[in-house]
View 1 (cartoon, one colour):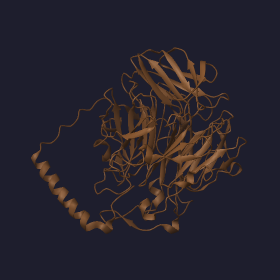
View 2: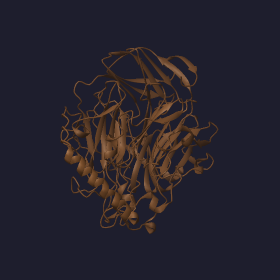
View 3: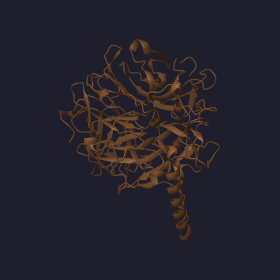
Length: 571
């Protein structure tokens, strides 16, 4: 969240005046641009009608306390094993008086058709910490998806006991890190068959450190991480397989590089068969922790080309996503940043990255808003990845669109066969432009119709439930990938062949910002009515081939049920 320091105001004001004169002169000589035609909506916002009634509270009053501008998390996961996506939404509260405002995190049960019922009471999932984000994964391998909640303060591990009930096992599991946790990921980094836990920390901060900060209009506003100059170390816990975790942050070398961590996404970026960790940092170098497969990691973000943008500039990394955009078999990266900064679209070329932001059409269009939550998914099932931005400022605007000076409209971009993203109209994909201070965004098919939906948590406002209503969506197929114990094989990669095309998708839940999304591999197929071959690359590097399948169905792929299992790295 890099922004102007008012102490340098005179010089900046002079250049702002010059820029304003030039802009006015240009505007007076040019005819107003044509308004782009509005197409059909891609989403309908139906949170209230569908029972997903949640209003985030930051606790903001007169003071601008730093964590108030960051929090609000969301998870879409199957809490009860009935095959549909339930929701868990993370509340913040009040930093000055925890009992004054805010409430607790809320758990919502899906009826199978995309309607929700609040089942928080008696569930044990009602953590009342100052919430930030959430990760979802079956860490104890019992077939139920568990939750890890990051807070300002001690984080919380909620073990799924079945039947819609959770138990707080934080102390017993040894994962109650006290700091300022943000995004988290369950990941099997050591390939021993159970899920370990990684989470980002933002800043070493406490209420006693809080200070008054001012924006460019000399208004009191939220501070920046650079005001504190105290980046935090991220944390890695190794799952010991018996319900406990060991902090291996130092042992794994993750303490050798610091950052203001906000986003995380795990994948095999260098093709060596081991899961690596990418961290989006705010106003510091991004980190690419490559897995050495001996329990240690090395940060090669600078060497590999994803620490900075193409001009060698540090940006304000927030949300992040990884997916194979160019269909060459390896995961590419996109990091979203602050207003005036473009997205950073890093194209993976054999383990090395090139900033491809301008080439994919995200140069000028992405810099308009401040972006947090992000989804690089195929909403219209045409076989090309689309892009969703959940937006919201971190500094006040002089001309607010609503009563909230931080609120902004979200953005939706359609991917196409020319390799570029084009803004969708209507803006954000909804008939009525939705304006809020959006933070977390989680993605999944909540109504089971083959179209990916979105849940967005908005700071100090009601959450969005965006149901996919894209007309004439293409065919699709989606895969739940299970390991030997029946747990989701997070970290696997699925490759499908159809109509002479090959597409690759990762099985991951942790990406975006402060969020956990549905851990399936979803493929839009366009006009294709079947896939010719399905290949799974398991986290240990073994490949397994499955046969032909008809389109428009959800398929479970179990390890050992395919054929021609061979060991090997990614092609």
